[in-house]
Image 1 (cartoon, rainbow, N blue to C red):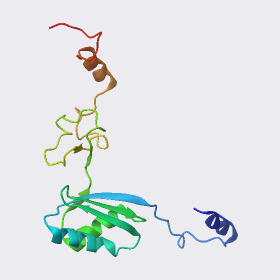
Image 2 (image 1 turned 30 degrees about the horizontal axis):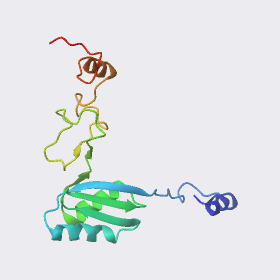
Image 3 (image 1 turned 90 degrees about the horizontal axis):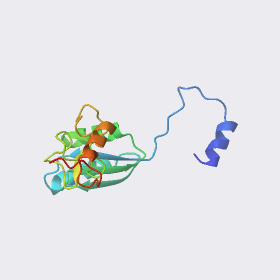
Image 4 (image 1 turned 90 degrees about the vertical axis):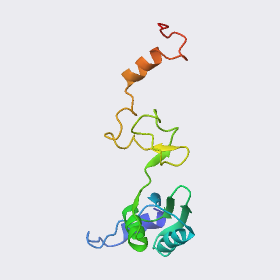
Length: 155
């Protein structure tokens, strides 16, 4: 909020809750949409370009990823793409593999993920308990690690 908004809030008459609108924040929405050809790419862009509040639309067909930035609501953007294109839309489920502690654990690794990405298991605790090691597990693993000079050398 700028200074003009703050001053106008104090100077204006009190509004009822019914008339006050919640402002949307500037955000980036990442979605996974199956894009087979240039026509699909064009259809997705066209569905989002004329939407109110959208600043930019970036479509990456190789990764099946659509990135929308602007003053928009993520749920509305995903509903609009699904309605206008007839395609299945889901939030972008992948993160770079550097972010996950154990990227090749059974719940995190996904063969269909783009190169350098794994499934986001940190946001969903039930997804992959093996991908999130507790401090005790990490300590035991480090005790038998080859990188640890004080490790146990029982072989």
